[in-house]
Amino acid sequence: MHRTLTVLGWASLYSILVVGPLVLMLIGGAPRARGFWIEFSMALGFLGLAQLVVQFVLIARFKRVTAPYGIDAIMYYHRQVGTLAVLVILAHPVVLVIHEPAMLSLLNPAGGNWASRTGVWSAIALVLLVLLSNFRRPLRLSYERWRIGHAVLAMVAAGLAVAHVALIGPYVTAGWKFAFWTVFVALGMTALAYPRLILPLCEKRRPFRVVEVRPEAERVWTLVVEPVGHEGLRFEPGQFAWVKMESPFSIDEHPFSFSSSSELTERLEFGIKEVGDFTRTLPAVQPGARVYLDGPHGAFSIDRVPSAGYVFVAGGIGIVPILSMLRTMIDRGDRRPARLIYAVRSLENLAYRDDLEALRLRAPTQLDLVYVLEQPPEGWTGETGWITRELLEKHWPRERITRDVLICGPDPMITSVDSAFRHMGVPAARLHAERFDLV
Image (cartoon, rainbow, N blue to C red):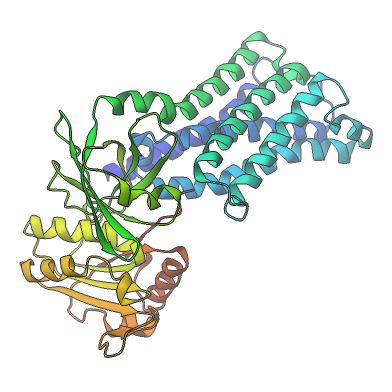
């Protein structure tokens, strides 16, 4: 009940922050009526700008904001609604030009007046922001460069938008209205700077050091760290943290899931797959190197999903948060039954197999392990191919208790497995997933 009220509370505040600024513009009297379409265009502009500024808060990693939903859901929402906010802002001049074609000349970035130029430049910055976000990988733009560009373009766009509002809008002729928009956008920019300036100052006082980096499978490593001069970090099994090497102010940071038990806070482990420039350097990291953590984050955890038993489905590196949950259950003496269906491409990609088998032997109750290989070696007697509905039905527990399903892996696998379970009659409320693609 508490979590539901928290979710509703934040959702209500979000709605107020998005719609409230538009309502405030009408206080104290609106300007002389100029026709429906012009007023509609103005409303679109204010609404889109407010939505854009609130996005800065959503991605600032405020734990009290993200905890009820999970930061993966927040990031997914940000990508979708951020794009929608930009489209709403772009609709503002489009509606004006359709209504009064003579205004088309004002869309010239080098023409018009300062009021129109700041608006056009802001719109160009927003379009570039969306394009770079959606085509970062095809453009082979590194995560670090994209991240800097994303923040700079967002701040430039917001600043120019405020200037545009001040120069062109009769709605802000009252001094307090312009002051409101200035403060509103400034707070949004502060939120945008929070994880880059304020959080690192806190992290600097709580460093960790590398204990070891050990191989687990082909291109999969475990990073082991321990706290330096503090009690460590408490987390829920299944959560993750952003990891930075050497400096808390480094722009080179990446989200990695904990693979260790949440009962062991003095020695933390992360499961990491080589997928980019940063992760390829892990084998060269030396013991004693400084590490800084921003976390924990995420809502994908058995601690958030009370159930009589679990079915875990992992694809590839998606095994990492599930491994943390299994280790935690066994360290707690948890007697609830669990079944893991774990799919990888080949036997060489089957990470943590020895650990999983050891957990099965230690489990105080039933822990079933089902391995699925897309490219099995000769003599393999386990499951092969993909995780299909037929395979899930074959390995679905037959006891009378009701189990929850936790799924983690590549997006296509999650979508397919989720659909298969729904067709099997598993209620949507009992299906829980985490997607790794946060950016």
